[in-house]
Image 1: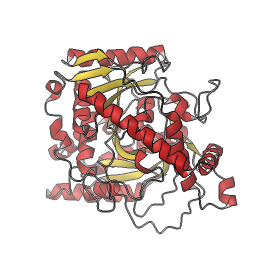
Image 2: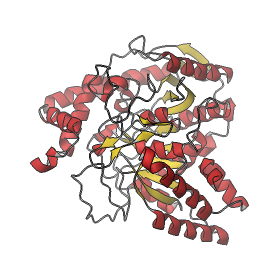
Image 3: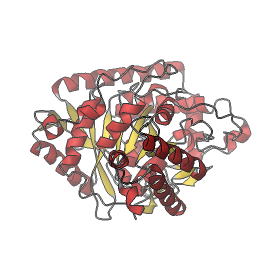
Length: 470
């Protein structure tokens, strides 16, 4: 049954229809893989064996009767432990959250998975309140990379990325406030999409406001499109949701390579020389860009031309952290991740005028990128300027850096602008650590980003990415 853990969700759905295997067999294999990798990787807060097998048995029976609930009937999924899941505590990596509950609500994306017949394997790890770009927390410890457990999986959706890469379910829900699905996707060698803000409903609202997006973490773009068709459905609890998607995301993939032909692609290898990119990362990204050209895209090396917006991002991010911890007791504060405590104190000292100045800078950045996408359909950059570094530290040791934003310059700007951005696995360094290429589209062009990503997969972009299965 171990071979079943290597199959994408799309292949599982087809296999169920053909009678090749059942959700019970697939779920048992995924649970076995989750247990096998948990000690060395620590991707899970909780693995729900009994509940998952019960759901799988119910799915198997519905499929036997020819009455599937939806597009994900019987497909094993995992959920980042930031999103509410009915019947399961959502600890958010923090001792400040009690287990008592009651845990009676699903987040909108989780509810759509349940309605679609998905099988929930468990909740995945996150740094405390998803505050940083690596995954370790006081409550649940350090999450390692399935390719090299002593290296970080990235974050803040590191548990989800590690689970997908390790074969513990082909689909996971992550959240992304500054790169949190794309960072771990790049480090772990999987695919992730940060959709346009509001495309996937979110409830409760994030304390980090409109920086935070819910997105799919999968093996490839076809699975992400399948998942997006499910989780982008409207939910009245999110007042900022964009409403029904105009078209099926899966249907957007049908054009294949023809969907790339003629696209105007801006390739920015280092944001105009502003970012130091590791040579092996740069080489892998260039190969992915060359594939786009072979598929018929019109590629031009071009930089979007903005200065690093990190100061404004920090104001938005740190005040959000202050809001998260505002009502905590001194005892609760004492048990926080030290870095989270630091940025919360920093955020609490900033004024409303500081915040509004950051909003002004954010709006200007959004306008600049809007004009940029009048000239270019896609912006292509490295997802990360480096590969996975030592686990258990916010920044690479010896780097002289202090905060995670210093090594994620390609990710957080596009949370500020709310654009869709995907990380596509495109190679590895000499140590076998994965590299990702980032595709960024104009707001509301999620289907285009998925379509271009899918064309790259079909052209073999991930052929040199090592597997973490085994």
